[in-house]
Image (tube, rainbow, N blue to C red):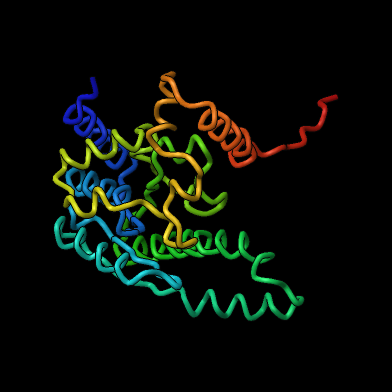
Length: 252
């Protein structure tokens, strides 16, 4: 039985101890308007106080509702939220790419989707360094991926998986929802259909399998043959995101 209060309290303790041990000033969190970043922000608000949180929206040809949902979270937990629009940066980058050749939209699709999280990652670290300089204490970047996403590699290598501290990476989607309920995350945010905000598809449509099926597979429960094959294929294909081949010279 998943004890949501106990797990929430454990994460809050983990955050506090990490910040005290390393004498940190605060945290920068990319706020997407979805459940994961909302739960992460709520955990940090309880652990270190909202005044030590810098929330950031990073629109890049994004839905306007993502920004407004992020504002709901910031207002609810009373932390500072800034907006850094990356649309012009992305467009300028694409202009330079088009100078390299006559590419089709289909050829550019995967590159386009993945460059956006990488621009966002760079921006979060830039802002963390700036905030550290302004406050005189180190600010770190918080990750917002959950266990299901990490298991099937639903993140961009060098993008949204790059962070300094992970607080929900060992929780399935259902467990994140439970912790979110314990933290009183607004219902419309917590149960918003998850999407990457980039491809125009929901997470589950893009993956071809539900988060419930992924959870059941990880927990050794029964899943359909179709879901099993999809999950195993996704998991196998994600190994390169975690393991970098490194040549090691022979010691003489």
